[in-house]
Amino acid sequence: MSDRKVSWRDRYPEEVTCVRCLEVYDQVQLDRMLWCENCRQRARNRASWYGWIGGIGFAAACALYVWFVIVPTDLVVGGWLATLVAAAWIGQKVAREAIYGAMRFTNARAVEAVPPTLDEE
Ligand SMILES: [Zn+2]
Image (tube, rainbow, N blue to C red; front, side, top):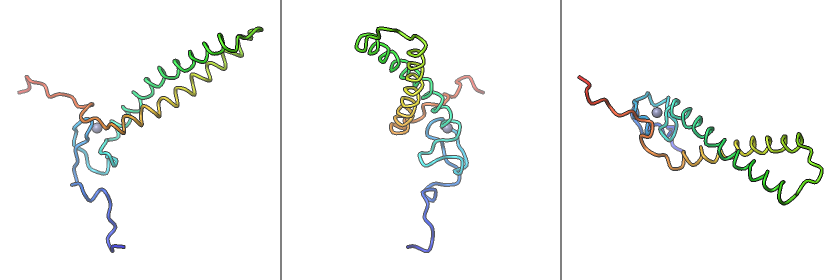
């Protein structure tokens, strides 16, 4: 045990550049991976949208499975629809977490950065 508490923040100066948007923030506003609050929020929103694609895809796969494999004889439409909506909902959540995790893992640099305008005086 050292007498001084060592934190990952000690490795960085007071002001740190967010790796996603390249804006400079006070280091307390960034997390371990140097993502600012806005970038985390944007990544979550994007993951959420892609998550719906995954969720609806999963629900469609379930629908095909139900239709061709289970082959419901007495089709209770409401019941199956509720099941598929639930499948889409759960699929969206799972896909969203997976996509957000992948974004964190790949940690692409400067993807939220706005290029400086050329005609700036
Ligand atoms: Zn940022």
